[in-house]
Amino acid sequence: MTIYVLTSTALSQEKKYYYYRPLEYGSDAMFNPIGVLMNGGLDVLQSYNSSTRADGILWNVQATSVWRSVTAPGYYISRYGWNKFLNQEVFPTSFNIAKAQWAPNYTLHLIGGGMEYRKLSEWYDYHGYPLPFFFGAATAMGYHFINELIENGPAIHGNTDAIADFCIFDPLGIVFFSFDGVAEYFSSNFQMNDWSPQPSISFHPLSFRNFGHSFVMRYPVTESKRTRAFLYLGKSTLLGLSLNTDDEDAVSLGGGVTQTSVWEVDVTNGIGTNSIHVGAACGIFYDRNNSLLASLLISEFYLERIRLNIYPGVFAKSPFSPGFFFTIGDRGTYSAGITMQYSPFGFGMYAPH
Picture 1 (cartoon, helix red, strand yellow):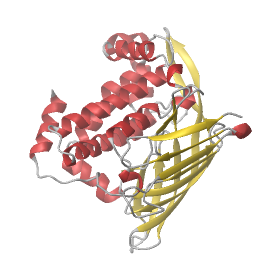
Picture 2: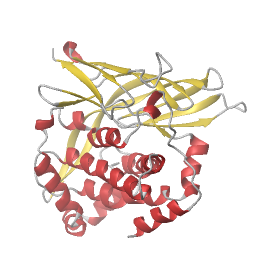
Picture 3: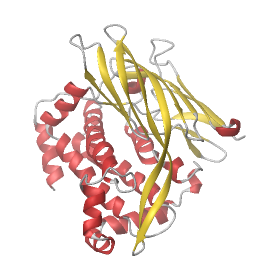
Picture 4: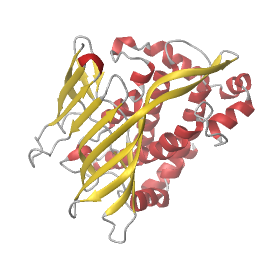
């Protein structure tokens, strides 16, 4: 009810879009609710399950497990331990990667998820939907739920990570970014935006390709504002610099780490604690007016050593200009595909080794 009141209040305020722009090029041209559900929901699929086949996910079992946890949070937190839950999932008490489950909760769920909710709401408003902030919240919580069921794995068990995300940080992100002041702060000061890849599907069997959920933040470090500190958040976390080449275009370079796999730290009363293995990663990005035109990521993730995305509008200034993606992994495995801004997702193919 609180979220509904806040989103309704935001609707009544003067209309201003902080994140969504109806551009005909780049990542903003590809932004739509279905794409967000795919990118946000499937983001970590390959870290938990090397297969990207739709029938490789036990949708009903995994959704049931998450639903039982998020609808009885007190019971499962008590079994897990309130002190352990608060110290590892909620409050930033440790920087040990095995005990810092709180870190993505703040960066990807609270801030990233909040921004995505606001951008979705603006998309719905621009396209004439009634109650756009309600639909924005519903879509955001939808991709969060898909993300949690992917992380849950193919069994029914208590899931305190889902409780922290879905019951605390995801709703808080919606509440915070319902206020124009918060939305404007991250938009104006950090030029925050969604720089996710172009989600696609392939057939025989039905599988997901080129998905991921990524955000960019940049902050000027020179008086001219042509040089900016660059932070790329998502499955990969990269830090670097962004350099303007003219009044509209910029090139960003960053280095850091990427998530390569997930491991179980411990189990308490049948409730597991997971952490991640990381490897080195770097990337170069080309954008126009903060809409990503092309990106090249190189990492130690064995399924995607190289990932190239070229977005619509690069090869021609036309609403029908296509986008492309190409990934290559170990032993010569690769995927490739084509996207169009008028399709909510692209179409690709996959070649095993």
